[in-house]
Amino acid sequence: MPDIVFESVTFSYNDKVLDDLSLEINRGEFVAIVGANGSGKTTFARHINALLQPQLGMVLTVGLDTRDPDNLFTIRSHAGMVFQNPNTQMVASVVADDVAFGPENLNVQPPALQQRVKQALDTVAMSSHAEDDPAELSGGQRQRVSIAGILAMQPDILVLDEPGAMLDVRGRRGIRRIISELNQTGMTIVLITHFMEEAALAGRVIVLDQGKVALDGPPAEVFSEANVLRQLGLDLPFSSLLAEALSAQGFAIPESISLDDLKELICSWFSMQ
Ligand SMILES: Nc1ncnc2c1ncn2[C@@H]1O[C@H](COP(=O)(O)OP(=O)(O)O)[C@@H](O)[C@H]1O
Ligand SMILES: [Mg+2]
Image (spheres, rainbow, N blue to C red):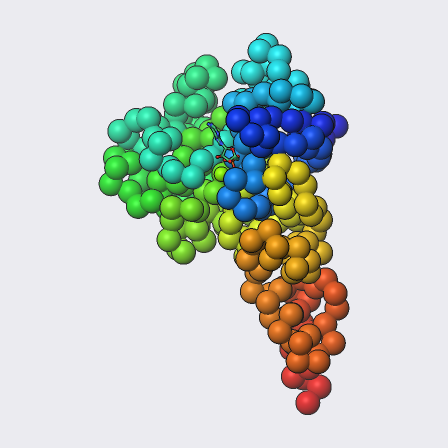
């Protein structure tokens, strides 16, 4: 059973935002969602944990229909959402209390509650700030605390909607490391991002265009579609730009190549000389 199923999902505000969208995401996958502004990424994310329901079609999260109000509590305890702006997610004036808020709402009692808070703060490397005021933290630290608040609910799925958009390079690097580590523990990750280097770290990249899937595949495959991506107004990761530039100079570069393989290829040229 896949963790997330979209079956012919259509959703409109005024205009159509999700257009007959079908896709499945399996347990343990790390999927990056990219697409131009307005392509429907946030609307897609909000359907996963039933903040929005499809007007046509069906969304199943951990096998549960998001349209059934009886499923909301279970769905939201299985699928956690991290938003762009960490400030809007802070509810308490002490970091540890903030992280405890989610599990408290799931009715987790002490001492399990403190245990979960501690573990979540350890995971995001924020234990030493447990007693601090979130207002005194950097943006990156605040975003890590928001992630800890979700982790303390022990979700199976973590959906992050441009978590690094308001952070500096260092802040983003911290979030990236946490995401990769969580995925290695088997958590399903859906990462919406407009940083292509970040998307290239995922196991699968889905490109949305006007609420439809334009491309879906491993990063090396998706990022070899330079023309399609440019037409959609998207950047290319550095590895794709480099592969393209080398091809243009007459170097033999395979059609779709991962960053690691490209590095190896270039190194092999130097060692041959
Ligand atoms: N609450 C809303 N009310 C009306 N229109 C909205 C609302 N939220 C988003 N939209 C519109 O829906 C479209 C898709 O938005 P969104 O899912 O946020 O795209 P993305 O996250 O890819 O930028 C945009 O044209 C946006 O203006
Ligand atoms: Mg968005």
